[in-house]
Picture 1 (spheres, rainbow, N blue to C red):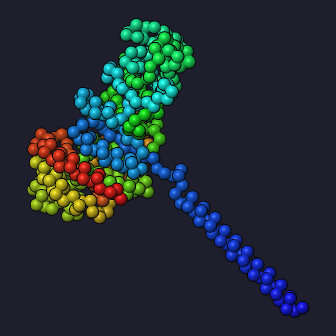
Picture 2: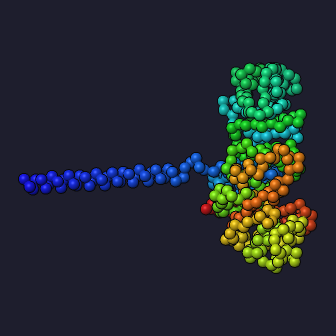
Length: 439
């Protein structure tokens, strides 16, 4: 009897211990799965926009492949090209690599867009005050005014309708479809039109109006072209103002003549911006810039014998501010960088506070909170806007020397000795760099 009781107690104890172990294992697996879910929550992924003040083809043909590789790697989500050129060749190049999402009356001719077309139907969203034009297959024109829409073939009106069609503050949806020998615009307009595929879609705006065009892109996904009405330095406000209402976490602003980007440390650069919101603008090591030149020399990346006498033993980058005018010195910096690239890309210089000197606006990164604080009054200051002044006056700007990019030229340097002689070397560097395995 005693043995039976001992056996029963032993069985109960074994079952209890087994259930405890099993419960513990289940809890561990559950918590492990939970940790995997929480560790990198999808909703916390930062949206990173690269915005390029464009666009000279000779430089951008080197810059764009770097941006494409970063986008492929998920380190940039969207690329925006702000068109600040009227050069025909440059404009055609920009149109070939992107999708037009903003038109201005500066260009009266039609601009080709590449929306996704499904079942011979395209869906557009338009935001404009007045005078928007759409042309289908270079034959039928849809003229949209604020209170009317008309269809034209070879300049002759063939149908029209009155109503409220445009809103300067909100997007209005418009569907265009060819079906059963008719062209439909929205739900109300149609005209006889022999059955054919929608192949070419063109848009433009006129009479002083800007137009914003939203659509699902068919090619060049997430590459946007925004045509600025203003094309001088003091009018760059339009590009900055655009992002006050745009969804992003980090904005990387770059000039079109950035001809090298160290993709191995780009993520490190954006992570630093993300994790250090106390810093206003974070500037890469741009090499060909007075601020970078000073600290690269101070930290032995650029030796004294490369620098002219005007740039040695100075107390501050502000003391060599006029470097942007010195083309002969820039040639030496170009050559030294190209001959010693790893020395720059492997540097371990800590971030440097730039409160006492002028940072660079050629390329910088900024998070949304600081962007809103910095540019929130831009509309009232548009006539006097100067982005360099906006950024120079801010406390908390930082130089991040470990992340290297190369700014090719300042205008005055090109007039004082710097040429395009090293461009082929930067192109070759780009090709060699981007053919290597992405870390």
